[in-house]
Image (cartoon, rainbow, N blue to C red; front, side, top):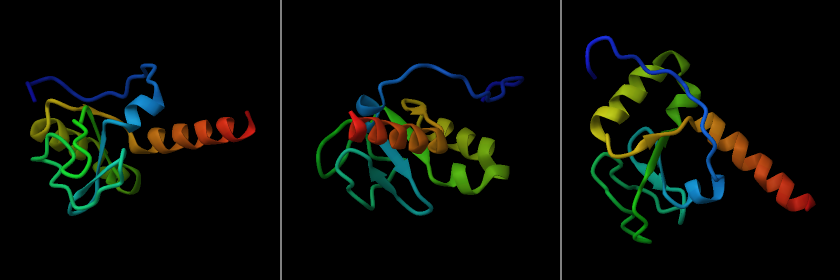
Amino acid sequence: MPEGKEFLRTYLPYDITEMKQYLLIMGDLSADCAACKALGIDGYAARQCPQCGTPFKYITSRRLETHGEERFRLVRRMREKRPDLAVIDYTDYIKTLGHKKARDFFA
């Protein structure tokens, strides 16, 4: 990352349904496809899901939620290894997805 640049959370409107179709969810050892739930994906190498063929546009990590003190180090690593993907906060994604499911259930 260039000298003097830091990461800040910014808020932009996203369609959660569209985002889920193109999201790569990093775990400790491998990644998952949010669209088809395929497991064991090499998140730093895969450009698309090997199971459903979905091209990835977004990336998040479960570790962002559980390792708060490492948050920006993890974001920096994802941006360095996958500059082609937009980094999404995992907690925000899960909460928004839950709210959408509740709205859809009661609609």
